Image (cartoon, rainbow, N blue to C red; front, side, top):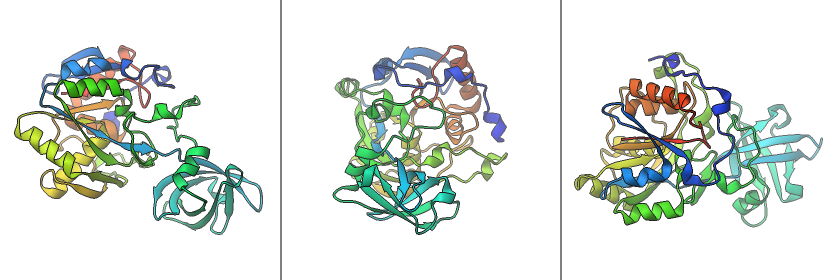
Length: 341
């Protein structure tokens, strides 16, 4: 298939610039994987669409306030640093802009001196390896001085950092939120559990490669970025128990989906696992774990809409997106959701 096969036209006003006041009041488009039938619901209705014995798998990765603005000590130039992945306790791969002002040996201060950094080297692709100097906890420091790395299509300032975090976020490491989970509240999750639906967690730290456009016309020529994941013994046992009892495994988000399918391919089944995945899921892929997928609406020609098309079927997916545009759903990170069952 070609990249252009996954294009759809989206009016700019349909891109959600801010989250709704109440997380679970988003709209929910429900798509039948078998028939393509569409229902229009609200997110809090998801409890009516789940059965006792099902399980939801959520990604508990926490978004780092990974956008930092550093002042170069020798010139006073301001450079933006975006934390991508941690290499050691004090070194990170970062994206710097403008890059010409962040060369090896340059030293920067952040937050009035609360944090310092030295650029160690320029990596393949132009990213920088940076060593940070700080007192106490690095994560506490960036929580204080960092900003949330919102996607480029969100142009309004986010007043409350917590609204770009899921209510169950725990393990810091993501450069972007696993946005399908933003719709859940603690109260809704508790009601889901009381219905007899199990809730399990995986961790996949979302990298900025999520937002990198597919440049190759033939989608099979695209190379995915690698992201770090972990799946615990507890979650593996929950998934296997659900399958054995005839329940459905429903992935909350494409990141949870990629984690489960990566483990199934690597381990030959669901077992506790940790590692890096660059799995690329597109139409023709044979799913080994998923029975349902909860996801937001994704950018045209992105690897994420390709993944949804692989699960829901290409024709069903592209039709659902057309309907969502016509019905004025809100799109992308702070937008509405789609449940494919």
